[in-house]
Length: 471
View (cartoon, one colour):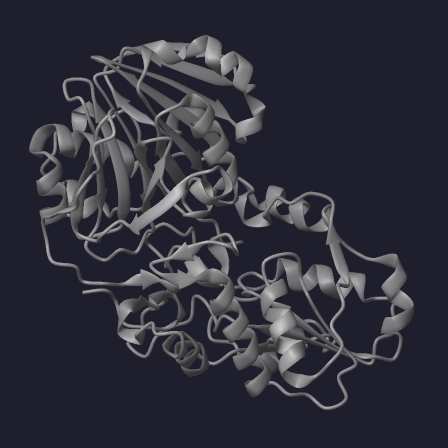
C-alpha cells in the first residue's frame, strides 16, 4: 500500500478562484472533486469523479452564475473513510437536505440546508451521541456536519480533539464557519484576495493565484468568513495541544508551501543534509532521487558531501501513486509512469549510486527501481529514505500507523513486500536479493533536523514511526 493523504480544500469568493486554488492543491487528492456555491439563503453543490480538470470551468459558470453566490468551497479528495467503491456518493462537500440529481459521473445537490468540506479523519467514538439514522454515508465528514447541526461549532472543538480542519456553510447563516482542531495536525491558512478573506489547506494556493497569506489558522479556534471584506478573527474555544503531522513536510505538502511557519523546502533540505551525515558511503559517483518529492533533499545531500547530482528517472505524468484508488491503480501509477532517462544509463555502468526517497511503505517504488537497474550494470545502488520506518511496532507492542487522515491505518501492514513489521535494513535488502541497499534516516536524526529549524520535537505527531499516541 502507498500512503494516501485525505484531501485538501479552499474557501474563496469567486468560482474562478475556487477552481484555480483547487488545482494548486490537486496534489492532496485526485479521486473526486466537489464545489459548494453559497448565496443568500441558498447552497448548491456539484461533485464529480476524478481531478478538477474533468469538469470545464466554462460550464461550471453556467451551473453557478456568479451573481447568485458570494462564496465557494472546493474540495479535492482521496478516501480514507467512506466507501472506495462509491467515490461519488462519499465525495465532499457533504450535505444536509437538498434535491439530488445524479448525472452519470457527476451529481448535483440543489438548495441544501448545510454543506461541509473537511481535511482529516475523526474517530467514530466521538459520534456516539448523534442520531446516526440521519447519516447518509460512512464518512466522518457526514457525521461532523450532523454533529454541528445538533450541537454547534464550539462543541465540535470542545468535544472532538482531532483530526480536522473543517469548513461549514449553513444557509440560515450569512457566513462560513471554519474550525481547526486543538492539535493543528491538519494544516490551514487564512488569506486575502481582491479585498476579501478566504481559507486554504496550503498557502501555495493563494501564492500561485494572486492572493496574500495572512496567517496559519490557530489550533482550537473558530473563524467566521463573511461575504464582505470583514477580516475574520480567531475565536479561541479550547487551548492548543500541538501535534503537527511531520509527514506534511516530509511528503504531502507542496515543496513551496509554508506550513505552520515552517518552510517545506527548508525542511527537506535539512533532511537531506542530515541523511548525508548518517550515510556517507565511500566512492559514491552520483546522487539522484525518485521523482519528484525528494529532489530538494537529494540536491542537499549531494551538496553536503560534494558529490555529483543528476536526475536518473522521469515520470510521464505528475500524479502521485499514493492517490490511486486501488492496489492495481497504485502499482500501475508506478510501473507505467516511472522510467529511467536513456542518456544516463551509460553513466551508471559500474557506478555507485545514492538515491534519495521520501519514505518506504510497501516497497512498490523499490521494486520498480530494481527493475529499472536490472540491465544497467551499476556496482552498488543505495536508496535512502529520509523518513524513518513507517508502521513499526512500538516499544509498547502496538503496531503503528495513522488514524488522522493519511491512509496508513494501524491495522494494515506497511513494511516491505510481505508486510512483516520491524524488519532490519539487511532483511529488506535480502528480499531484493541485495540488488539494492536500503537505508532509513534515524528517528533521532529526523527530530534533530526539525529542531534545527525551530520546531520542538514535542510539537510533532510521530506515532506512525514509533512515537507515543497523542494524548
